Image (cartoon, rainbow, N blue to C red; front, side):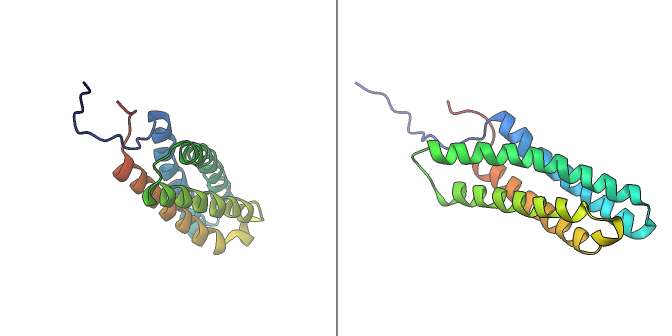
Length: 142
């Protein structure tokens, strides 16, 4: 005799994956705010801060993307949200990588492309975090 409580197993984010995913938002937001501060003051240090924030966001986002790809490859029940989540993380990381190259230039050469890319990357990070937490939640399968 088997007992079934009627609950289905849904994909859940590992708590470390959730921390890495949530860490991308303040880092990419910091790059946007640093770029805005640079456009108003023209102090080169703000461009350096933006570069460091982007690098941190890429590290966190890269590990979150790695976890999403591993989970996508391991699970048998792929749905459109898990694929969309992985593609959004990939787009965030790729555009963030190009943004890091833009910010590696001279401070005058980073504007306005660096600011625009920083805003786009931050919005993509927010969208991927929203989908990650709203559709999957955090915690292991029980």
